[in-house]
Amino acid sequence: MEILIRGLRYIVTQDDHRRILKNSSILIKEGIIESVGKADGHADYIVDGRRFIAIPGLINTHAHVPMTLFRGVADDMELFPWLQEKIWPMEANLKPYHIKAGTELGILEAVKTGTTTLFDMYFFEDVIAEVFTKFGVRGVLAEAILDFGTPECKDADTCINIADRFVERWRGHQLIKPGYGPHAPYTVSPERLRCISERASDNNSLIQIHLAETEREVNEVKERTGKRPIDLAMDTGILGPKTIAAHVVWPSEREIELLAQSGVLVSHNPVSNLKLASGFSPVPDMISRGVKVSLGTDGPASNNLMDLMETIKVTALIHKAVKKDPTAMPAQLVFDMATRIPGDLLDWKIGRIEPGFEADIVLLDTKLPWWTPLHSVISHLVYSARSTDVKYVLIRGNLIVENGIFTKKDEDEIMMEAEKASLDLLDKSGVSSMLKSMD
Ligand SMILES: [Zn+2]
View 1 (tube, rainbow, N blue to C red):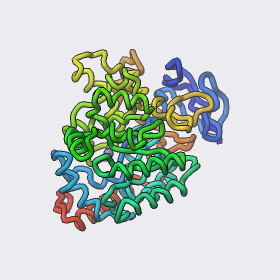
View 2 (cartoon, rainbow, N blue to C red):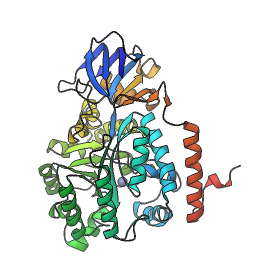
View 3 (tube, protein in one colour):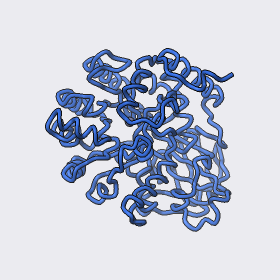
């Protein structure tokens, strides 16, 4: 199958020279980018690119996709009561049926807003991986592990066994990178973190963990173990170049050094941090000290979107204000954090539009008032673009969104099923919702 995207207004290559090409084309053969530039001629499928800019598909490095079902159920609460009184009771009733419906909705939202690779840490990860592959979307997926068990497993040892089987089943899949998801240093003991780190290294798989998200977490972990969370995680061997650490809002100076040395990829989740009042992650300081930082949305219960374009803009704005320095987070750097920085960590060739790279490409409509006049493509992408400008999404050359419409399943059906699953879950958990009193 050959796809030609012809005469694009611009191509944001994200290559080493950050080239932006004008009036250029992209030729895709069997899911791989064949050429970028003056390609022309015939193909099995041709897109007229004149009103579009092409960008590499966005990479969202922290999410809990099925939590779309909890969107708006409990807002404006502190993290710990929010988890203990709302989220965990609802999660206790989760069944694969809910997971499937929530994942379908989450993927629909993510791809329609420009994301082509989605990281996930949750339960029933097998069910989640099946939805990802059915829809043809790239997933870096981690089975969650907690000391007190999860809806899928009664205790941590069972969780670890399930994670082992999950990694075994999906290893080597074209679209899935399976891994382990020890929830956080305050929910997984140091001994278990050590054990998970060994398993992941034996299986050559990724680890996803929440780390230093709140000041309360830092104090609790320090009280219990005598160490701060990142320091402790480092001791257990869990931090390395195959680990994604979400949040990292409260690292000490020494811990920033440890993060840089370990090669861990930090996932910055500013919208969740703002909503839960967790604090401001020192992202510019971490970057200047050599820490690799990417972007995530976190779950839709604490954002409430899975829209990485929004996260890109918030990231660019928030650190300027915190540092009182408008040069603190340049647009190009923030766009790198959503594309080539996490792309380089994975051994898929993604995050750039270059020959030989996977054809994970997003086309945004630019014939719109907020794109006009188009003086700077990168500035507009970060400060002016809206996720509704996304009109085409390709993943491995597979057309997932065509002219604004999801091609893999009827969108109304996905939304209806998710609403039904969400209501069912709330009913079983005794949690109230406006939705129940409607119709
Ligand atoms: Zn999270």
